[in-house]
Length: 345
Image 1: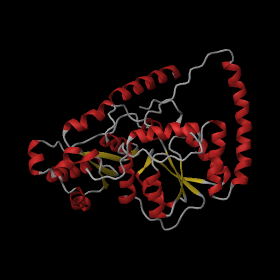
Image 2: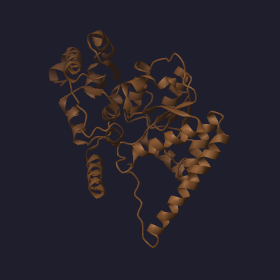
Image 3: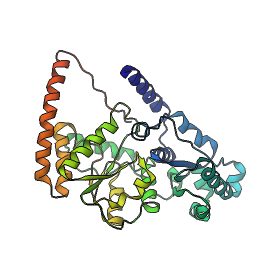
Image 4: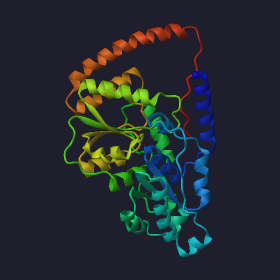
């Protein structure tokens, strides 16, 4: 059974790498598809809505939400006439139809490049139907270079950061993953969906998950372990996003700390809007290996003044881990091992 699972994951990964074109629209589609109860709706032509269907469901969707099918991806089907005269009416009708047919908790309107060129007033259109639907609704500017988005950055800078941080884990990255569309979606969720809390939770943290291709990792198991260890230290996990519900997203502002992996700019935005402190680690290099895992818990505990307690909890975890590592060392002694990381560009 385990071998069969690995074969399936391997095939999915190969398929995803071959057909996943990382335009901003696709990044927005991925992020929304990783939220339970959310349906992405594309304002654009059928061609733009087609290629995401070639990609298997995200690892986050399958492992954290337990959904083994790709999300629906309805589309306004913009044609030549709409490009000339505008597609506002098509979008209004599509929003009403998606709400009626799918009964989602959240509709995420994704703006394609052609729709941005037309210049449809997406804000006005969305606001005009809000009272006519049961679902919450957001819109996200995900149309590559056809909108004025200061958050887009050159991927070469991203690669330079990766090289620099591998050499020195304490070096601070200058950039985040700003250009894949996920950031726009996160901004949109914060701006349009996250609610100001009546009160903050005690010692609490939000955790930003990472990686639609991470089929081989036990994501749910890792998160359960993180939650357990943090609980022993005296820290609760408020929201793990994405890989959560719409209500979880709405309640993000209850936390006192964010652990962010995608973009420091979004972390700063949450800090400015809701006063939430943050730790930013884009590549995971600071928290790699046993020493890195120790550093992860101590860095978080330090933010809450619980470092002494954390050191005791982490020592106990390390002692348990050492026993398991001794067993593994016996199993692999004398064997040649190839370790393959999740592929990047």
